[in-house]
Length: 347
Image (cartoon, rainbow, N blue to C red; front, top):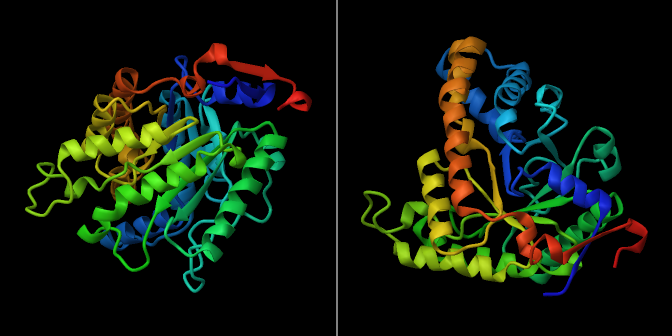
């Protein structure tokens, strides 16, 4: 394997967002539109009047109570500024760089960055890494995907110049299909694998790919009570190994909002498949249940849940990662195969 060159600043920040073994055990708290929607629904359910302070304060409390258990926490500056201030000082900070959602009136779910942010501005605000989310369908027309590929190159190059790791989250879709349908489940492995093959290329300068599990767990035979399935567990296991074989750089899994036991099962299956994944960025699988508790019972009820179930969720995840995940630097052939250089000498 060719030697990997990495700037001193980027290497140091990669170590900051990883645990002592080099595994990325990060908590995602950057949800914006989806979190607002969930809190509005809960507010209506419990006859509360929704206001944005509910979102700001929720992120602050969750970050304060749980961030010390994670190697890093992913937060946004728009709704998560209180969470950034409240996080444990020893925990790394990954900051979201993309606008929430997408313009539904424009074909292709095109990505865009927060207009008053930049890599350097976020680093000045304490970021150890950046993250963007891109909706991607490898089968979309070139006029759509060429925009996303150019976007990825600009993003990766900006991180390179700022000596800051770039996390690149890919969520696959097909505008003709419901993402929760059996029809979409059948094509999802192909979409995820093709996405990995594209964005793992060196030209994008992406440091960590944040990937979906390459199947829908609802349609794995034997995983639910449904008679409908798209794949056997062995096939799902094979997709996980294929995903790993395509990767030429570190990659981690996103939880995609599945229940905690399902996400844990997916990670165990990945490890059993021999997938060389490097950790997780787990959001809703860690804390989703607490949204209702927060709206209904307030801070005391939320803190109680976080200290009990929220803490157990992260500790169980940490145990699985210690057994199944591999350090991020193993993606480059190990620490001895990484040459840390001054950015001006970067090849």
